[in-house]
Length: 170
Image 1 (cartoon, one colour):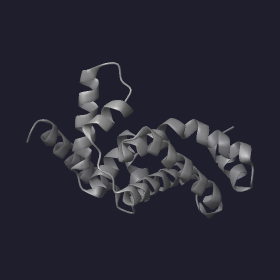
Image 2 (cartoon, rainbow, N blue to C red):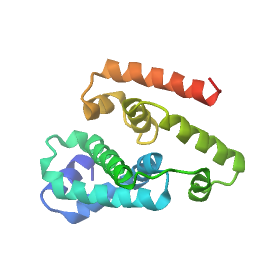
Image 3 (cartoon, helix red, strand yellow):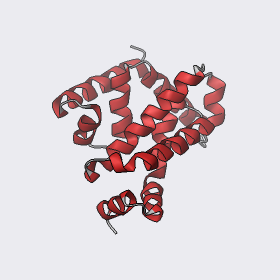
């Protein structure tokens, strides 16, 4: 069954359809949440709260083709809300215990990437997270952020250059 039919059925109250939509997107939702909160438990809380809010407000989604963009926006807003409530400081040790990777060098690379993302402006970080963690297209990102596609592309490439500069000690 294609997503459009599942979305429509979910809007009509079919819990099974909504569940299928979430299962297909669960990993992406978690990755985006983790990118913001950098803690496994908090990321799961973000996904849980965000998907609940999406379920409650599903009928407000005007165009089914923007379901993924709409859902990611909810997850990002929920992550930012939790961070605001927590006002927590993330220490290096938190990264090491939350990121389960075989190689210590890979952990170091991920930590450096997360720290570099945190140094970007809010909209620059959001563009990169939506592009690389949520796998959204420039078109979808532009709609989610209410900016032109060309603006998103320009900010994307500038943000990538900033990340490269940060990661290479610039």
